[in-house]
Amino acid sequence: MGISAVDKLINIEKLSLNPSLKLGDKKEVNVNVSRDLVINQAYVGTASEVYPDLVAQQTQELLSSDGSMGNIDNKMSLTLSPFMGIVKSPTLLGTRIHLEFTITNQYGYPQVIKGVNIKLGNGPMHFKLFFNVDQGGSRLPDLNIRFPIVVNARGTTRLAIEFENAKQKLIHKGNIESKLIVLTGEEKIISKKFIFEVNEAMENTLAHLQDLANKNKSPIVFDAMIKS
Image (cartoon, rainbow, N blue to C red; front, side, top):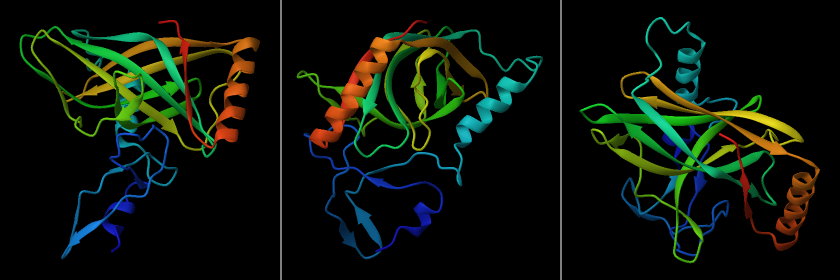
């Protein structure tokens, strides 16, 4: 059975719900079909050149405005983990990263988060999926969390997200100036700048991990320190 109604909008990648799945793996899953319904099937999608990330487009429009419309929300804030996960995969042509962060709401009523994206240097990183870390340290897709995210009144929500640019290699030697951008339900944005420093030692480490990923035919995640 086809899924043309979906794959015209986003690139489709099958995700197994097997607990042993590691992020970046592609696993075949069983499809249970009842008439025209597909049951127990999970997908994730990333933006392509043909079908762009609409959240990223909207946040870019808000960022490019002069600020006179009050597009920046100063009563919500972001706190980043000091580490960013760099995923090295034998099948990935572009860039994939993991970022963990909190969103704090200072309003006296709940706020809604519609979506997130990252500008890593000169390139966009699109939302791919949420993940969690189990007791053994493995990172597994978390299909229980979905947008929109509700942040309670005067509360804080923690998110762990995998971002991807499927085609562009955005990690290079030097200080990569980056920004996490969050779009709220009130059509405002929250942002946080950070820098990922890639020196010669980091370059060599990432190249070695890429070789290991290619040899083992399995993705490897390396947590690199960032400055925010």
